[in-house]
Image (cartoon, rainbow, N blue to C red; front, side, top):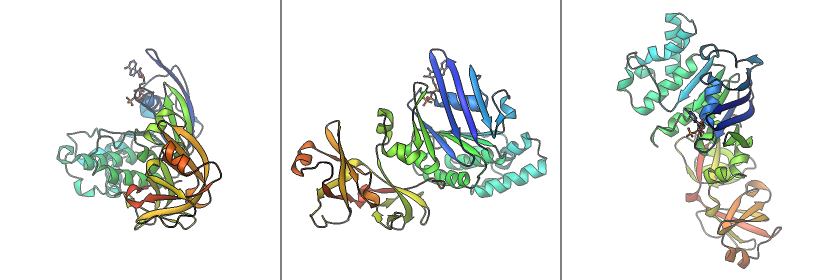
Length: 358
Ligand SMILES: Nc1ncnc2c1ncn2[C@@H]1O[C@H](COP(=O)(O)OP(=O)(O)OP(=O)(O)O)[C@@H](O)[C@H]1O
């Protein structure tokens, strides 16, 4: 069910004014600095805040005048917010129960979802007996057990430690891709969450949308300082393989796989522009273990103290950025159209899971 939202909200001196669409079966990530209005948008979608003006429709049905409990919205935040006095299975069963489903059927739904998130073993436990990662698995099950038409994810991985986050990110990626009917809105500070989970992103600043587009395009070629700070990364899409990533045209990008990347599934090789070395095209293989690829210089842009060289070419070199000192640019006589060879150390490349929709 596709979501259409136009929201205007005043909170003190802060004014939010945004409009966006989320097609059915897709995930929109909302990125932005602290205080830019991300939580305010989720609050308006969930019915927790009363906007000054809003048109919020899901499959054409107006949500904006409905109270929160009639909106069929699932919310997952960084705090699992489980009821401490209920068992895990009853926490998850609470979602279908509150929609009027009978007790036995609600428990059956809860057990199915607990199995889906690999938490069936804790069904009888109390939330206090779970680790942070286990509790968040249960919270994912609860958010989905109510079969929401709209799913809101508010920094769902922010409270997890670095060991638990990739597993939950992978779990969310799987369950989000499995439902072609639902619209999902994700608020996150982490570009890797956006890459793994979202098809499109909007970037907010001061209550306004300042960038929007397909996730990889926005993160690879950011136009605002905020997006450049959290992203500005080289992103090469493909399929995860044992020693890195295979691109659509058959190229291999060697790299270190993040724990969430699964062989044979969509992935993105991520590396900083500073990790890319530029050599004259006629130089041979500049040593291993390196990824090397032929390209031509597309553009040269000053970027603080360095020059950002944007590569053009066929294959996965197209669009890559390399940061060089002005002296190196002069030594190599780089200018648009000059053929070059790019090299990236495999140890500087990380292969992350990518949205299964993309
Ligand atoms: N309770 C409040 N009363 C008045 N104004 C508020 C209140 N909470 C937030 N605001 C204003 O709304 C703005 C947007 O806040 P919001 O929480 O939506 O931002 P955010 O992007 O989610 O930030 P963060 O990343 O820190 O969670 C803030 O800059 C602040 O000026």
